[in-house]
Length: 420
Image 1 (cartoon, rainbow, N blue to C red):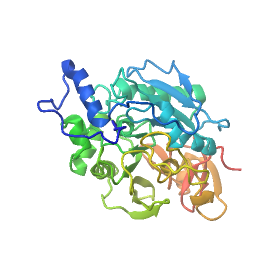
Image 2: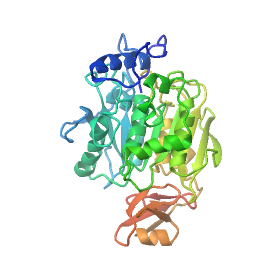
Image 3: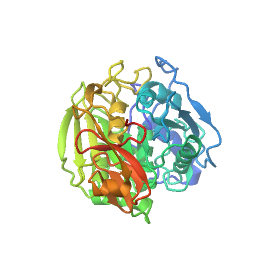
Image 4: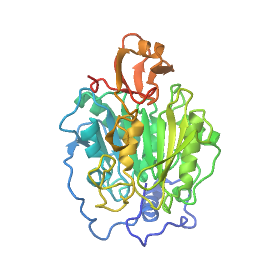
């Protein structure tokens, strides 16, 4: 979402008379005002990241109605049918900046997943923000949302990626756009991680400024209905969702973390009271988890102390470290990308790089039907989901076969290429 790149930038209420819904003739003006409120344009170059990650531009991924640019980071060693993680940068940033500082490419190398970076530009938004607040871009089948969907389709066809293991994450405007993708395409994404973003469709009847700060308070049922309205005919399960926030964020205030929690717990039919609360990382991040009946973490909220707006990183070479502070809005704290990969089920190692179960992981190969019958997976809406991780394994039948890795006991992840 838009984000200031100057410590002197302030976010205030919209100018008097600005309509809550942009009219076509005021579109340019609205985008310019949003850019100022959400993020001040840099007056000079951002500090260089420690090292530049090599990204491959893809120009033929689809009709691209949202006029976005697609980049791919393909690890040197990639398993057959790898998972896909889509990453969405924040305002004033670029795909390159997010790749260089978020720590995601290093994790892709370690855990064997394909990275897709979507990028917007000043032709779409003066401050290079994804247009999460525009109906033409935040709805299924059109605009920027459809462009990102086309990137996923291209990753599946061109790189042989696994369509059942597609994930999305992003910062600020990219975090709000992450919520858009989860709502508009719940049939595409298994899980997502919203970093300093907003609940889906907050701007249906509110200005983006009000949504960001002080935030909008709706009931969990009302928030959930806005997601259902994004794809009314959908009857399947909704993606698992993680939410990350700095507790000193004044750009997109932490109240939005609670509203996001309300939206996605309601969609999963869960209470807004966490099932369990943990303290993680080197900074005592508070992690609230909301578990489904089968033990799957359906929703997770991670509140990072002592930081403002940004993607938390922990530079270093340790197993729990990642990222760089080489650009604004990557505060030194916890390696959020590592924990997000873990939430997605892509990182099967526990803290310190050891097996979280403290022993040897067991592997099981069989049809989706067999996995469900053995208690290693569950079924909902005709699809099969790994117990514990909640990964979508495809249709519930005797023809689709997968290998599941159990670690720790009772927690299963897809490991078609990761077991002996």
